[in-house]
Length: 338
Ligand code: F6P
Image 1 (spheres, rainbow, N blue to C red):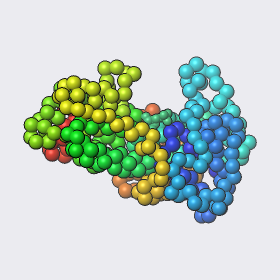
Image 2 (image 1 turned 60 degrees about the vertical axis):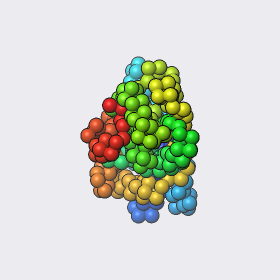
Image 3 (image 1 turned 120 degrees about the horizontal axis):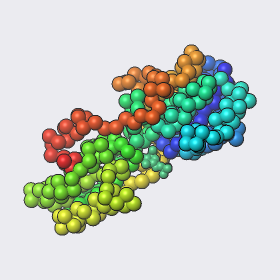
Image 4 (image 1 turned 135 degrees about the vertical axis):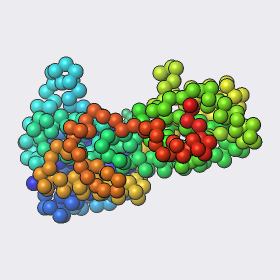
């Protein structure tokens, strides 16, 4: 068999470990041919590829980013909007011309949606979920998330000492798109006093009351973790900027703002993410070898599994208010803005 691998959407730590997991299992265990497709679906539109051998997949396990490059190209976007696009046809032709028996699509929600549409067009496709946001429906966890939580937690740890020295409120904004997973996990791991998640909403007066209450109890500093996806009155303003100004105005306590940004998705994957990516990558190749196409590999608890791409497409996995980390945080005095 001959398989093609591409990574699409925002990069994240662990993609190279996945490429290696898929590719080495295919080459060494199943004797398949493997090609890498550059820059996501752009590479498939232009037949921009490289041939992988075992050597070219060595030394990449701990590398951040993706050796294949990535893009946010969505070949079905125009077709879905206006019913007119050549891209799906070109991709189908190139898939055939390249002699592929299956396409492995490593990506987040948008990529899995495209993978499902390609599968509906008759291509053999297997999806591998990736994103620091942890918001892909159908899998308990995505690689990249653990690394991002580690980076965000270390930053929150560092903000504690400067917050306490200056008796300030420190607001830190973390990524997550529409989901609050990074904010919840890094906030709780970093001992934040206030955590604001898009899924829960918040009342800024409750946030200010909690901060003033801490000050009255002899704790004149606070750490506030804000997910980038929370609502603010002005859509053009960064959530952390709005929250910082509203806290300073509402409490009179000096407040500073830190946006972690792309540091959360750059650099080496954590050991946990390397192993997760390796397991998911290996399972993707197993699915191909047994001709189970149109599926996305996933984690159910600590088990590697797979589900139909059609079940995943178009859905988001969000934090639910009954998450036990929220319940536990509330019991221990963390404010979620309610
Ligand atoms: O999905 C990963 C992510 O890093 C989000 O957390 C963030 O909102 C977005 O990508 C940023 O995307 P871009 O690379 O397009 O700036």
